[in-house]
Image (tube, rainbow, N blue to C red; front, side, top):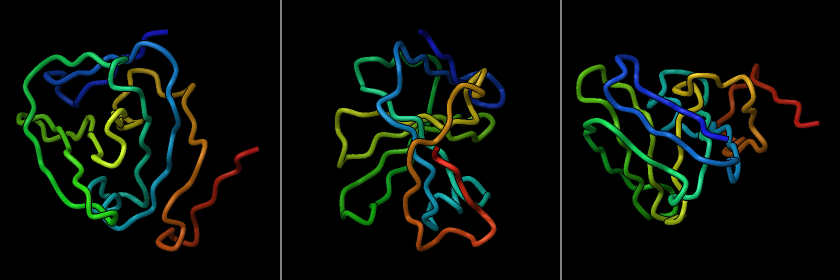
Length: 125
């Protein structure tokens, strides 16, 4: 199955071929700041499943592990579309909300629960 994701203006896109390795809802403060929301949702695919199109700008920051995370975003509209965590070199994370049809994708895990806002809850049954 192919899944397409893109930024708000459509200039930057990424296509994943196959099923995701995992889907994580992240409650860390960095994801809260990056998304402007209560949490971020990363759909992880193996790097060899991905194909990108368009121009991106990158922002690199250190994660809690001390390893870097490179975020790719559209220089036109500013949407963060995907990122590559150094601690998982074989994986690429795609922002759930960037997919053309995110309805079939749901988190399989929730991380950084200590930063989770108390009104946020997930049912992983």
